[in-house]
Image (cartoon, rainbow, N blue to C red):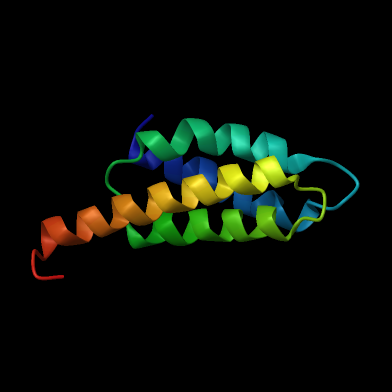
Length: 95
C-alpha cells in the first residue's frame, strides 16, 4: 500500500467519521484499517498526519470504543508521531 493509497483510505474514513455514533462499534473496523495502513506509511506528510489525527481523535471520542481499542489507538499514535519525527529529522537534522 503506497502513500497515495493510504491518503485515500484516510480521506474516506474521515468522510464517514461524522456518522460514527455509539450505536455501533465502528472503532473496531477503523482500528483494523489503521493496523494495516499505519505501519506501511513510511513517508508521512503533514496532510496524512492530520488525516490520521482526525481519525484517531474521533475513535477516542466514541463512547463505544473499548479500553483495548483505546490502547491500540494510542499505540498507533506513538507510531505516527515517531515516523513523522523521523521524517522531519531526515529533512532537517537540527530539528
